[in-house]
Image (cartoon, rainbow, N blue to C red; front, side, top):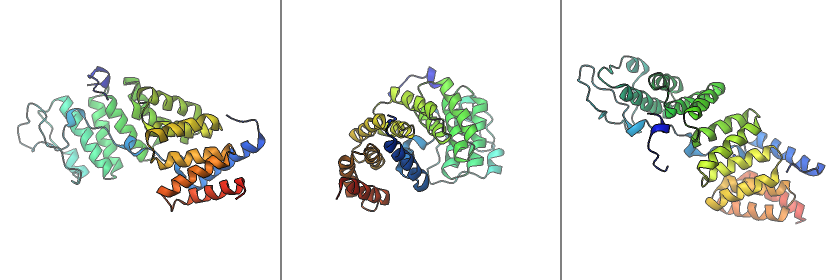
Amino acid sequence: MSRANKRRVGGRKQTANEQTQTWVILLMLAVAAGGLALLFLPDKMLHPRPAPDNRAANPPAQNAKAPAVATIPVLPRSATAPPAAAIANTNLNGLSDAEKAAYYQNLGSQLLEQGRFADAIAQYKMAVKISPEDEDTHYNLGLALGKAGDLPGAEREYLESLRIYPDYTEAHNNLGNLLLAEGKIDDAITHFKAALQTTPEDPSLHNNLGHALARQGKIAEAIPEFKEALRLKPDYIEARYNLAQGYLVERDAAKAENEFVELLKAQPDFVPAQQGLAKARQLVGR
């Protein structure tokens, strides 16, 4: 059943100053070269969605009578999913379409966690074929395609999940990150803002929006997003680093120094923060 029909349960200034533009360019180069925290994705956004009612990945026995409702136990996270050949020969006779889709979706999620991307994609495609109007199946397929390197395919599936359920926060976020990687910054910002409309208290979304705004050189707009991320999650290392970098770009070296110092209290070995602190102190004249 589509989320749209389910009962809802609550649930990343361009300045005119040429010197500042140079700092923006340097910041972007640093991100590209060092894989800095601006590019981190929130971990919780990367997990596949379970099928409705957390229905199972274990198939019924080959000759057993299928239950009238989905009572098949879920494999523990440490369990190994069956080989692809065994999956292909699984007998699902007697299960409803909803139960079959749940089986394929949850098995796909286990395969995805085990790094078996091709097998996971095959299972999610089976779920989509059975339940083409379920937004979670499209989202999970998009997630698997993205991990397998098929970014256009992932984008297509995220858009399909949003067609079905426009308020799908995780789909907006992951699609925003894909678009950002493709340099489609305006579109990425649109999706991050859409995600924040429904989940305004998620610090990772504020960090992602701030990152996208920084990519446009809109540092003065990015800084409040990083600050909000830190208000919501004071130990958010990536957001604090991004805020410190934003202050550096704005030439507010004293504030940058303070943020780098706070960051290094929590993570003393974070080399980019050490380098940023040295730059801030150089600008302050220390």
